[in-house]
Amino acid sequence: MTATARLMRSHSPADGPFRVLSASGQLGYGIAPEALARGMARQPHALGCDMGSIDPGPYYLGSGQMAAPAAMVRRDLELVLLAALGAGIPLVIGSAGTAGAGPQLDATVAMVRDIAGQHGLRFRLSTIRSDVPAELVVDALRAGRLRDVGASDAATGHGDEDALSEAAQPAGLPLPWPTEAGIRACSHIVGQCGSETFRRALATEPDVLIAGRACDTAIFAALPELLGYPSGLCLHMAKIIECTSLCCRPGGRDAMLAELSLDGFTLESMNPALHATPASVAAHALYEQADPFEFEEPEGTLHLRGARYEALDEHRTRVSGAQFVARARPTLKIEGALRLGARAVLLAGVADPTLLQQLPAALRAVEARVRGLLPGDWAVYPHVYGQGAVRDLPAAQHNLHEAGLMIEFIAPDAELARTAAAVFKQNLLHFGYPGRVSTAGNLAFAFTPSELDAHDAYRFALYHVMQDAPLEAIFHVESCQIDGTAGGASTAT
Image (tube, rainbow, N blue to C red; front, side):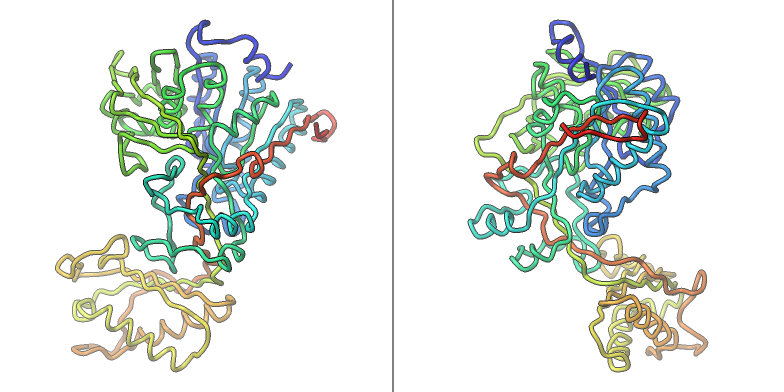
């Protein structure tokens, strides 16, 4: 009997609290083994890990690459896989491989198979594919079923709402309305599946469930919802623990244990130096949210105005009062990224107060000169740290002592991007701006070469909500039996 099958047959709310351990806020950046061991000693009924986010921007979705180092991903996967299978409890992982696209899900599953082969593990694995066909999104666009994230009648899914831009989409500017050509040009499009899809996948009774792009809450809420715990409490609990001990004082990344009952849940960090206080837990409602009292999920809205936070001791907090209101129409957050070109980056510093006062104009003048020297399809995006690279600053707040330059060059190929960066650098280095005292050079360099290759550049073409999304048609659930005793072989079921 699989871990999920055992849990579904042996536990109900009448049997007492449901204990769920959150092992990682983003798997692949180092799970603390001591905190994980303390959590497993508390005999949780399930182990969950968030593995991804859209926060790193469109590159990882567009490229299909993982953000976390492969060696650390494998290390963390090995820790949680051995812990869950050793305890006979379900392991649930969401947003596999960072953005949850097909190549990232496949790479995650391949690592799991390799670990199974190394340790001789046998278990039932289920996966959720989150890739969305471009034509399905085009149909929704034509039918008027796409909405901006944050529209009043649209569910955004949980979190990840600030990382919309790279060079071609300056932070703070609205995302352009998608076009059919832009949708079709996306290298990957994913949908952020919610608890409904996780519950359907858990019905296959896996030992291990790995999902593509997913709402962070669904990872931890779906199992207790299936068991009969209130959805409002399940989702509120899940929203907090998906970031592990970030909700504590001081905040951290150690494993977090939640004990859920019919009238509330208790939160406790598995690092004794981190304390879940009423203030720190309540403040977590501001994390990635514009409204701390209402959170939109694919199936409805989580209301927290009636939430209560009570200290049980200096280390634990009890939470109650959350309510969930379902919506009539299914909605789905859609994310898609398309390639802009190859990118090179020029890094330099400026300390001349005369140049700093006129730096934006100097950069424009140098760009005009370089375009006369180097025609072609290249773009430049200056980021001036100290003068508004992180956020827009009024001129009166600009740093007039020193500033850091990070200038992006994007072109169809890497050679042209590097060439543009090199020519721009040399012309800016000796640019004759008004009031210049020395002709020796305008820039300082921390190292050479100061122009660096910076992978391909992508932008979001889709960061929208689809109304009336055909969830079962989009999210494909597959199951197989992993037999590590036979070298990681599997049999689909």
